[in-house]
Image 1 (cartoon, helix red, strand yellow):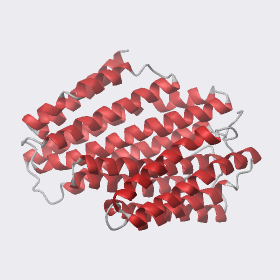
Image 2 (spheres, one colour):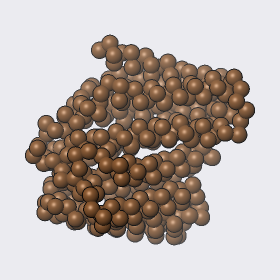
Image 3 (tube, helix red, strand yellow):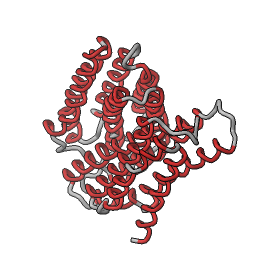
Image 4 (cartoon, helix red, strand yellow):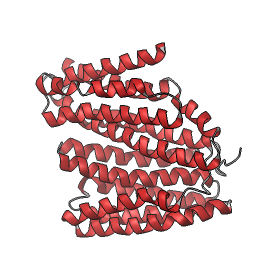
Length: 366
């Protein structure tokens, strides 16, 4: 296939192991929002997720082009995995006491990524990554500096690092990057399902010290139903399979551009939604039939809105759907916020499950 990557056509077990470690960062970001449902905490999570997801995407593009089938490549990939693990440990207090550790781990992740990417068989791919690597390296140093100084400067520097990373494809271009559709789509689909599963685990951990009575069981099952709806919205109608066919039909450069837009920006929104939903559900388990604070209710409803918006844009970018049902459901999900803040957490989750189930039913009928 023209423009296909030179890496494995299937996701390897080592890549899956890598993804399991990466998703630990999602759990840690969820904990940040659970501990403090404030705009400051939300901004911190957005900044960290934007930085972390960029480099996860970098590793997904990496293994799409460079198969981890040799000992030295596997060792380097394991080194990058170690960087993500240490990064995850630093996430909860990254804006307090572990900012420097976050920065050092991020620098290791970037260094391993660049070193391994240059081992691609295609000269065009090597030239392409050499255009992008300086942006990644400078951004990593900015993140390190921000973590070292802390305070307001940390927010400013990390925001600058995100902007630099996101502008790098515009400045450096994507010519030369090769995307193997089957591997690329499968890799991202796996990390999304793992993230949804990890959100269920995070909620269960939050409930570990609570008495398992009827109320807890009821709202826990509602939360599981909400996660199942998120799975169904993306996987139930075969969006991953249609995305693979859509990418395969594109010319190499357009495929690379579409892969960046759909599987980085749109996926970023879906992951942020999963984080917000899981954080709010942990609070809901504590007092399922009591009203949530407005901030917690907004986090729960807003998480669903952001996930649906990301999914709608994903469909439109790949031309695999209009995204209309998702967009409509996103608007209606906002109506759940007063229910959670004025009535109960269980009521809001139940309303969101009903809304998403209705959206799924519309998809099935269409």
